[in-house]
Length: 312
Length: 278
Image 1 (spheres, chains in turn cyan, purple):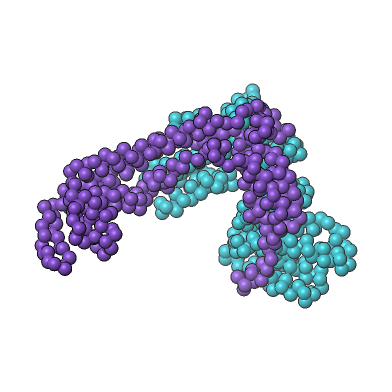
Image 2 (cartoon, rainbow over the protein chains, first blue to last red):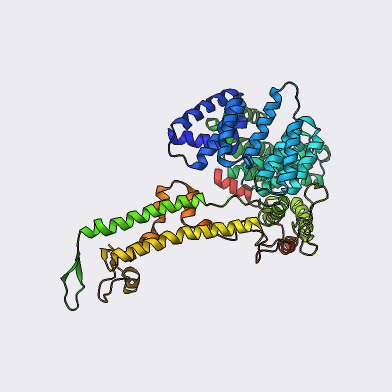
């Protein structure tokens, strides 16, 4: 019982999954963590401080500011104030202080504080974590108050300094995808895939962007002469390859199986079931079989798979 | 203390050891070795160097070099157009050494035009005056001292109190070549190589304790300190004398990228998937 709980809490802390938890799960995780920290033995220093970080974040989510501040001070005593994560927590507490203060409702002082920290200190003396962490925090604050174009410009400014940050590339890709700028989204997703080639979620997203690029390009669909057909199928094949790679890495990634079924069906329809594309028929059958494995799916996957199966 | 049970011409000498040797010599040496290892481990934690800090431009420089290498390694996951586009871009950026932190010719930290706060004039770093480099050297010296001082003291202790003791017989046969290693301090020519002396037991313990520490210390960072892996003096010292010249590395990488062909990493994937899941 103890080992899975420890692993669960540490994986929530290290992957940042706490940002995805709903209020009930936050409450449960908070209590589990508090109890675990009270009675646990055999935690390494690294694990202990990871869990303490998680507790601080959960305290902030729950609005337990005093407890969060107490934890922040405890961490400061251990690591000193000039530490990457403590810079981050200080800015979180600063923001909360501003929210609680009815006179100051905006986050401008926090942004200015971070700007100041970056330009006067981190630009000259930083490590692999600190500059990027604080810059991302700055971008997150900015996102609330500026246009998406300005925000993307700021992101690319940071990406020019840190071109290896897959997380930032992924954020930009998602924004472009929302704006239906598929070429830009594809470029950004490709960066993520290049930096993390085993990231099946990014491969799936790249395939999705390629597929919607094809969908948005109506001329290739309407003019069905031989050249255009080959071109159209080439674009669909590019998307299909990404989804195939994605399911090669993770069999249970249902989104990719859905798109494999849809794309294979589309290629077969476009080519009028040409024998040249017989492999697509086999892939379509395989994808259908995978979509029927409801025992390994969560509820949203089940609904999506049912919908896809009923439409192909 | 050691008596000869049977010595015959042509026969192997068989010794009967005083059982007290186990309790008075073998066990104390082993315990002292374990305790010293543990104490040394925690001392190493205390004197561990701080996380190396550097100007942001140096991290950017390193990231562009790494990205060039990643393009060569993982270019197969891109589309042909995507690869071509990135190949041209990276070859240009690296060829012009646009993101080199310290240019060799003009002695200036370079930045992109949009970068506001970081542009500043700087002379090439003297590795001896670089605080990161001197920190690394100091921590290396401290680490070495933390290793050598206890080793010297224990060696003196074993040599002084237990010199010439034959402690145990190893449970596996060994060739004569091992005699020198296992029987140092014992002046016999015809003793079987399986017999180990006290000083040899000290050396065996010293070099063979790592698996035991891996078991006792459930912390990867501590273990690496015990085995002395983290004592690499060149770590965290970019630009140190004799180190890699980033400008040259970028230009070489740019050449490699320019001639790199595209390889499609998705070839035969349909057959592969059908084979795996059918």
